[in-house]
Image (cartoon, rainbow, N blue to C red):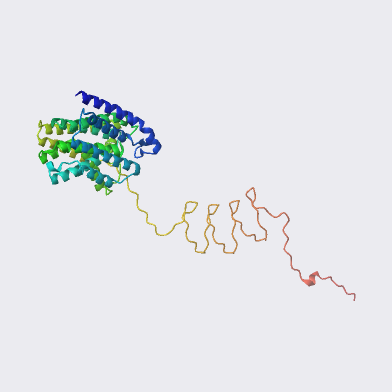
Length: 422
């Protein structure tokens, strides 16, 4: 009892200290989560992994809490999964590689001699899927840590009932390390899990639950395992259904998780985490009571029904934007500087924009008409003179009198008269 308190306290403060110290290297190396409103360091999961492994290994080295063979394999396989998650945080590995790597690690943990080969294969697949679902929970501040703490406590209680002290100590150390991590991951988060911490937490919790249910009825074991991980399963099912119905790739990221939809309904970040934490606690409590025999396995149907209602209800919350119509390019189009499309010039020349706001028309007389600065068109002068506009609005008259028309006279009248004498 005293050793459990000491180890839990040590794990809590060590995880809190490492989470604070690893923030600066993460920011300098650019290891941040850019899906959030502001970049958040990703090395918080490394603090959880290092703390859990160091404290649990120290108990085995000192002999205070020696680790069994299966627990030692579980801790080593979890460390390998954490390294794979850290590689995903650094190099952005695809989800399919993470699933395959986690399944390979789970294959070394499942006791096939007690579960049988078919049930063992199903357990490997279930462990890999739960680890991936825990990675999906790292989409909101404090959510993955809260669900991890409650699930680790529930699995640890089941292990304590089965008198698996080494596994119970490992899960209690993990829960304490997650609590220290939550000091920096609560909204607004100063650090986050990343794939390293989320995959490690999901893998250890799921593998520990499988080990505690070894030798039980497969149906009741499936019920208990579902109750212990109901929140992670609900989030994964909701995301897969939503993306399939929307015609989106399943492995494509998007704002379609549990916390995203609850935020769209008006909940605050802290309220969302608290609400999902209450749901997780209720489901985990049912799983623990079913494992201990206080409730029948049919009680898990209430958890399954509530999970189905939540998934179908949140599935109706719109989270995807409208798709942009696909543009079909037929020919190369040139954009006019004045905002209009240039049309083909039937005369073989490119039309230029008119600075006066009108389009120039072809000149039938072979000359280009110039714009009239006074707003009127110049008309041809019948007298051979160009009329100038008058400032008074009247046309100017010639300054000299007009030449009178020449009158025609007869030559007989205009000639001098000759008078003959006699």
